[in-house]
Image (cartoon, rainbow, N blue to C red; front, side, top):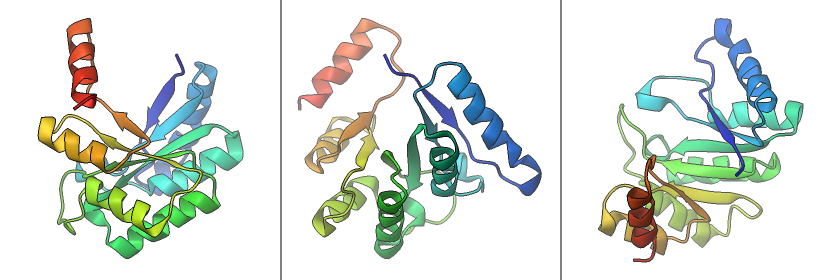
Length: 167
């Protein structure tokens, strides 16, 4: 099973080396890729896309970046996806995110807009499961390339999530 290592981008100039250290540690631990969060809990950090491009260019590692849709307009979403195409980011996880004002752009709607515009070629675009059966059904209707699930610790939880994916 491939291992992805989750990384939060640095939040200030003094901690910029943390990204390099985290990527090197992930590679040393056998990770095939890194998963870069975007301002978790609404806390301001440097851009996940910039961190992802850096890791991709310097370390040639598979990169998944998170994009907080609550912070994006349709135009800025399209710009971010185009940047992912240009810099060959492997995957994008569309997340709603917490904290701060919202533009009202939800991940499902963002994914539908990306598909309608014909963007994201060569990039896997995913969403997060766990918002309930109806919300997960809408997410699947948007045609994600992958879904993130809640952490599962036993077979009952795994079977439940698989069942929800077949809704």
